[in-house]
Image (cartoon, rainbow, N blue to C red; front, side, top):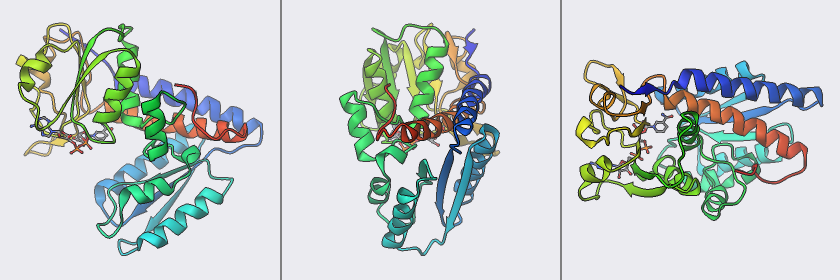
Length: 290
Ligand code: NAD
């Protein structure tokens, strides 16, 4: 039987640290502030943004939510980002994805100053991650690494498999595991012999977006399983990519959905925002040493 890695407990701890650091900055006259841009009326995006504003409030971080119309042009959106870049009171800027089709997402993301890019999605921060330089780490994979570390396991030397190669989860997760000296296999929709590869993994991170994708036969006995997936079953129940009841008896540690990686993503955003404020107060232009 696996031990459950509780996102609830870990995220609460991280948010408490963020709150403490935000309070310290407040004593020095710095009110940590996050600006969140949301375009259009996507209900899931709206719910995510509400969650982020709530987290900010809990951590003593000010948050400004800019609600922009679905019809906004790319240049208008770039103008808003430029205003926030120039505003010294704003330490972190986040653009909630997805954006409407008339807007090129990466152009918009790259308009955010790297030192305010608390999502860690700009090309500059991605490049720094690849080079092993100081950077802002994307929140979801950073949360996965925190969860792995919380088990006390030694990541170095372990065989890690990441399923999914998106820019926001799979690829950075693979890079971060590599930086922790794991031997990483990055699997995706074209991977051959996926089951065998997963079944040989000491660390398995699933970021596919398909309920029931990772079955018990894909789990190496004693593996640590991190389930990033957020899916809804036909009856509306929230679930991950991993068949929990099959994986749990074989794994040594496993994350639940809900109550797992999702909460960590939110907590890591708070940490990145406080870090951005601290760096800016020190006149530094980048993230903190990883
Ligand atoms: P995505 O759709 O961008 O990427 C999915 C990846 O899965 C792709 O790289 C694709 O190659 C791979 N894939 C698809 N079918 C496959 C198959 N049959 N075999 C192997 N690989 C396959 O998704 P994403 O944005 O990376 O998100 C993945 C999941 O994680 C989604 O469920 C999403 O909701 C969830 N997510 C959760 C959090 C969180 O905070 N917990 C954050 C971001 C995303």
